[in-house]
Amino acid sequence: MPESITRLAPSPTGALHLGNARTFLVNWLLARRYGWRVLMRVEDLDGPRVKKGSDRKMLDELAWLGLTWETPVVYQSQRAEFYRSALESLIKSGWAYPCVCSRKDIRQAGGAPHEDDAAEAYPGTCRGRFRDASDAAATGRPVAWRVRVTNEPIAVADRFASVKTYNLAKTCGDFVIFKTDGLAAYQLAVVVDDSQAGVDAIVRGDDLLESAARQIHLRRLLGLSPQPAHWHLPLVVGPDGKRLAKRHGDTRLEYYRSRGVSPERILGLLAFWSGIIDRRRDASIGELSAVFDISKVPRERIIFTRQDDQFLCGG
Image (tube, rainbow, N blue to C red; front, side, top):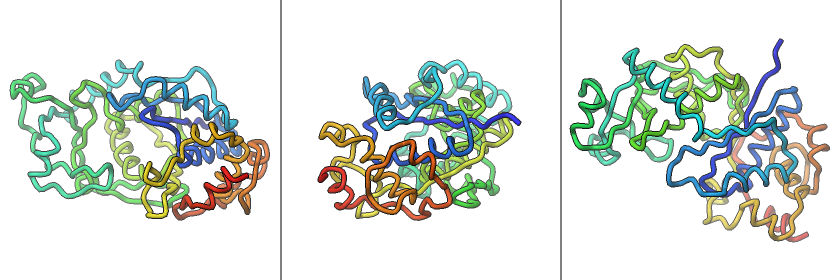
C-alpha cells in the first residue's frame, strides 16, 4: 500500500503568526504519526498581495520550529501551464465560461452573503452570455472564468470536523477559477497541484471547509480521483472571537523570535492549545512527535489570551 502524502502550503501574503504555526504543527505531527510524506508548496498566486521575500522568511521560520519537508519546494507561480490546461479542459467540456461581472455587479444583483472572504453568491449573470473569451473581452471589461456548479449537496467527509454538507448553488454560486489578471484562482490551482503531487491527506483550518466542497466539485469535473482525506482544524482567534490580526497585538513568529523566544517555548504553547500537553511549558519537536494524539486536539476554536503572550515573553 503506497504511503500517504500531505503538504504544508503557506501563502506569502504576510508573516506567519501563531495560528498558522499551530495548523502547520498539527499537520506535521499527524504526518509523523502515520508515516506520511510531507511536501512544501508556496501558494504565491495572490498577485499584488504577495510580499517579496516573505516565502523565504516563512520557510526559515517553519524550519526554525523543527518542521521538515521533502525538497524541492514547489511554487504555484511556476505552474501556470498546468492550470491553463485544466481550464481548457473545463471550457471544452462546457463547465467553464467567461465572466465580466465585478463584485459591485454581484452585490447589486442581490447575491446572498457568503461566509468565505465576505464574498457574494454569484447569481449566474454571465452564464450563456458570451460565445467565447473574445466575445466577453469586446465589452471592454476584464474577463475572468467561472465554473458552473450544480444545485445538489456535496458532502465533505472530514475526519476531524465530521461530515459537512454544502450546496454550492446556494453558498457561492458559479465560482471563479481563473482571475482577470490571467492567474489561476486558489480553488483550481490547489486541485491541480494536489492531484499531480499525489496529495491524499489535507490538514488545514476549518475556515476552508466550504472550499473543500468546491474542490471536490472541480475534481469530479476534471476526472481526478480518489478524493483526498481531510482534517479541518478550528482556528486560533482573539478574545473577540475573530481570527488573529493586528488588532490582537503582534502574534507573528518573527516578532517573538526577535525578542529571543525559543522555538521550544513557541512549540509548548502550540502544543498546549492542541491538547498535546496539559500546561504551557517548553517542549521539543521530538517530544511532541512521541506523544501526539489527534483525538486530544480541541474541537472548539482556540482563544489567544494575555496569559499566552505573557508565557511567551515573560520567561
